[in-house]
Image 1 (cartoon, rainbow, N blue to C red):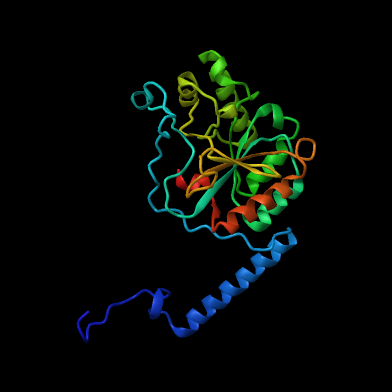
Image 2: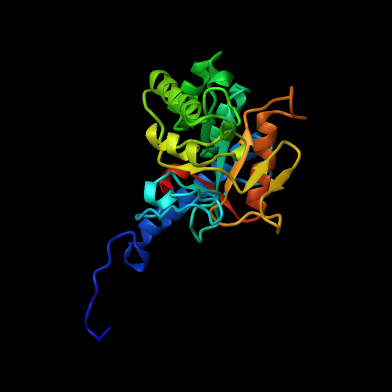
Length: 272
């Protein structure tokens, strides 16, 4: 910049901010970080979870994962099946399936720690307590379609698949006020009819997963047995009846794992 020419910089950006403002901001950040650490330790974590960066101003283009397409995928404009969001940021996305376990401490833990997650619900598993997921919804959780009865969809006719998906859309609208735009096929299994039916029911995306977290281990899709920027992580609403632990136990394992690797948990819907 030529001598004598001054460039205006908005207050709060870099050196243009008054020294007092910079000091106040740094102090607020220290207080916030201390509060996060205190909460993390109350929930049994040695470190506070990392905070995800702001979502992109322009959403990434979501395409089917290579090899996960079906015939006429592009021509028919079918919902893409994908396992990872295109990003270079060290973030992952936590998704939780079915709805069998309804642990109030899990809702409290995720809310206090501000960990975003996306739920894919099956009517057979939630109809005994729709209210639990209304509480989750009020806390900012996105509720999505995982079919009425969790069948192996490729074994059904197109009409039966449409019944499973559209039927769950109606349940979601009745109980939670809106029809989701995401559907996860049970077991991650689908065929062309699945995606045709999903589109007919108003579904735009069919995310599956690239890794799965349990209360005692991680499973991986990739050969390197690792997580990668933008990976979608699967787990389930499960408790001691099926796991050697609780939902909060699973969350502790997951958060320690991703934090130690330098990853934050982001909100999937912010990238779609």
